[in-house]
Length: 126
Image 1 (cartoon, one colour):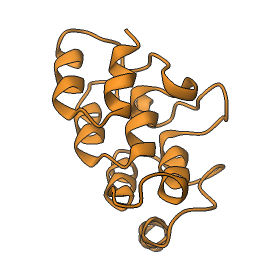
Image 2 (image 1 turned 90 degrees about the horizontal axis):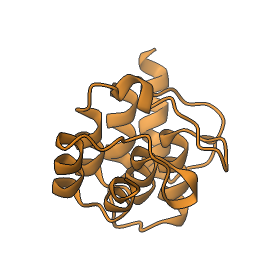
Image 3 (image 1 turned 60 degrees about the horizontal axis):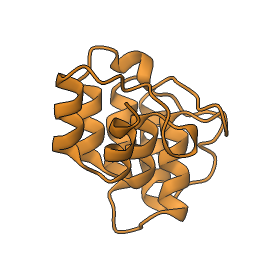
């Protein structure tokens, strides 16, 4: 079942959606002990994140902290925006996660300027 996290790491939106439909558990740990949502968030893959957020357990998924770093998917998005592929859309991923109920906290202090702008706009709207 780790295949869902691996597909999310690869940004395979269609593969993730199919695995969810087949009953794969999106909480299954994958790369660096992150769930599929952690992996898709780090990679800056809004389509894959959106597919995962359509899952019935989405509110719980956004709050899960990984067992290695203790970070949420939003934390992984922030870290990925600095250390991952800067051509990917981490700002869109941050918006999706915040709209799904994620909240800034530990692990979201450092991010790319585009993700910091999303977090600041969200904070102002609260």
